[in-house]
Each structure stands twice: as C-alpha cells, then as structure tokens.
Length: 106
Image (cartoon, rainbow, N blue to C red; front, side, top):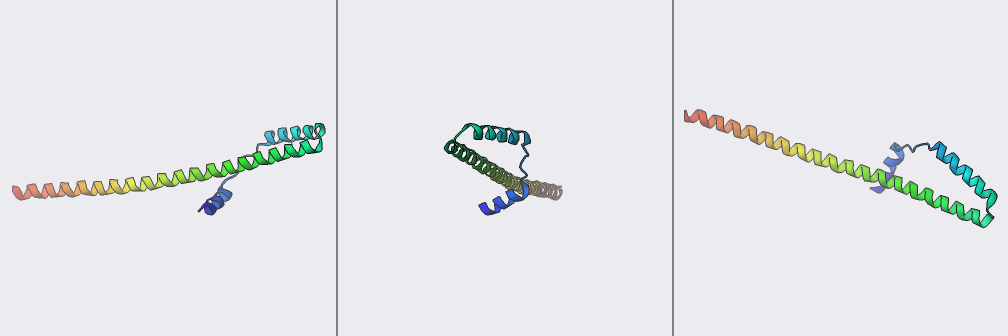
C-alpha cells in the first residue's frame, strides 16, 4: 500500500520552487567552502544531505497522512449517506403505513 501511495505522491505532488531559499543556501555553502577545511566541509554536506532527506520524508508522510484522512472522510460520508437514505426510506415507509392504516379505520 505504501508503494501505491508513494506512486500517487510522485504523480500528483509538485514541490514548490523555493528559488530565493535555494540561492541563499548556495551562497552560504560557497562561503563555507572558502572558510572551512575539507573535513569540516564534508561534515556540513552530510548535515545538509540529512536535512534534505528529512524534509523529503516529512513531505511524503504529510501527503500520505492527508490521503488517509481524505479516505476516512470519504468512507464516513458514504456511511452517512447510506444511513440517511435508509432513515428516509423508513420514514416514508412508516408514513405510508400510517396513512393506509387511517384509511382502513375510517
């Protein structure tokens, strides 16, 4: 099921551009490259990669949670419509019986 939801996510989700934020990140990254030694640069890149992965997983989780909520709401609405339909039929049926019962008594 999770594979299907991931496929739906890939199909329907269009990530925002964030062009200003991306530019700022790139500028900060270039500044760090100039200031830091190679081991520290690697550490910064690992941090950035981990944060990107967390953001991607959070986005996927949010999509799946929203989809599940929509699915549950749909099921609730269908159940409500069925109950409402049955209660309308019951009310109509009892009205018809009481009308026919009154006609027989008169």
